[in-house]
Image (cartoon, rainbow over all chains, first blue to last red; front, side, top):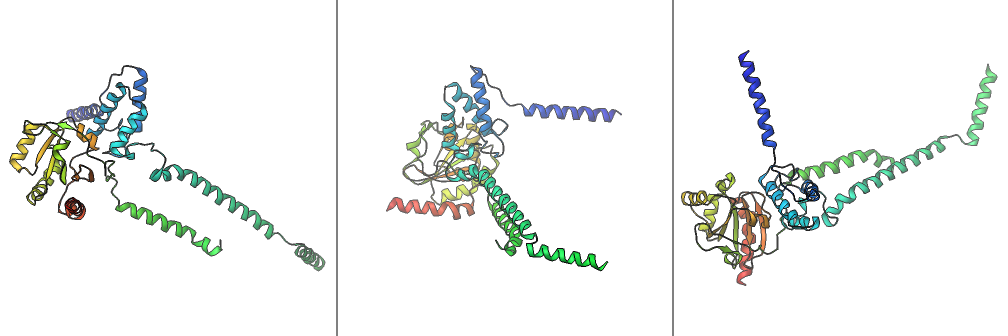
Length: 158
Length: 179
């Protein structure tokens, strides 16, 4: 029993420490509007080190630095566009989760549209060919006549 | 579209997808293209490790050289260090950027393991690292005589990396410099 209590205690401690780890530093902003922009930008910028996290979520040292930088730039009055340009100049288009349109990123932006058009074309073609086939599958006038004759013959046999 | 080709369509699509994904296996997603390739090294004035005089961009440019970002907290840097010393012994000038590190620890590292660097820039806040687009140590930049960044390698520089990637470019830049 005592063992179990110790285990439970340790487990609780473990959970608590996990939460302590998850804490990311907080910044004071001179206006709520700046804080809003900080949130938006830090979720839109990608951590160069960990790749599949934005800098708001990541606890990598480089993300911490970038958040600090972001805070400083916002307080210094930089526009969103200036901040994005600053980051892109250093880390490339890669740091943006919403890359600019053009060059290598064109395929990213256009692929959904192209896929939609392709899927639409396939659907259209297959529907049309199905309808065409049902017409072709119907009996021609001569065949219908023959069918009637055959049926009548069978009627006569009975 | 003939009925025969339609029969093979799923196989063709599968093959194309498999080829695409197979190629993806060979790519390293951590290898980011540096935004600074063929751009001049950023301006800076930072203290030099173990010296009075600060270092600036002009002090480390003027000849083809390597710029190596390292730190004592970086485990891979310790792996890389012996090879850097070999390169230095071969006469390749290497400048160090001691990235977000402690001066005393860095000096101890150099006295214990040897010093392959011509000089070391102390980047305690990581400001030069930020301007270079550094996202982790070690990183190595090949800078030409005019101070333009020609290549960036992220990770350990070893014999394979040097011989296959850096050395050919280094030689080319050297010969272009003389000619």
